Image 1 (spheres, helix red, strand yellow):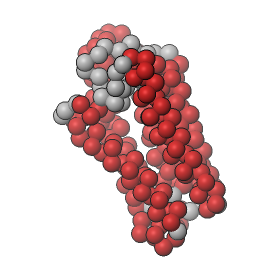
Image 2 (cartoon, helix red, strand yellow):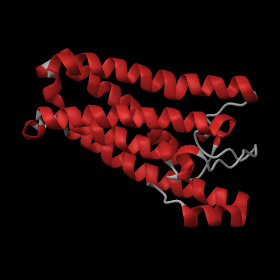
Image 3 (cartoon, helix red, strand yellow):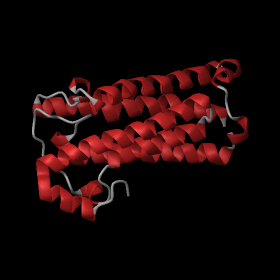
Image 4 (cartoon, one colour):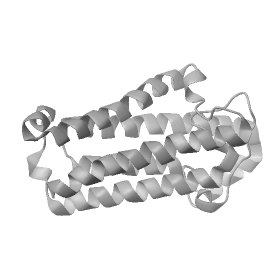
Length: 200
């Protein structure tokens, strides 16, 4: 299984950061002239979530690097060897791939409205079609699935911490964004919330 993981992780992270973030951010800027990464500019709760949302991907890359360097360095992460089963690792890979597909599709369906964080300066269209017809937060759902998958693939103390922090931060950020959408779109958003679940 290790040779497969050794190939899978660099390819996955290259696609994850390259397609879901860099390419999508560039595409939004190309179409609108705006930086889609608005989280950095926001204060309050979002200032806290922004800090951790920047640190957790770096922690994920560090885990990958230590794993690729070999068993002695990976041992520094306190791996849970009792969870290292091929079936769980394959499930982890499947969740990570599925999560990335969901995120990229949802980002495409958001089009020019896609942002990382709340854009308080520019009004964006309220998207209710595509995956948003089934989930109010398919992109955040993808993030949650990806960190669960990563933990199953490489179960250790750090991926457990990443998973737990990500799940808490996503819950916080979702509520910040939903409050903003409620203020912006009023009854339309309230009806949408009654018709579509927060997750799935």
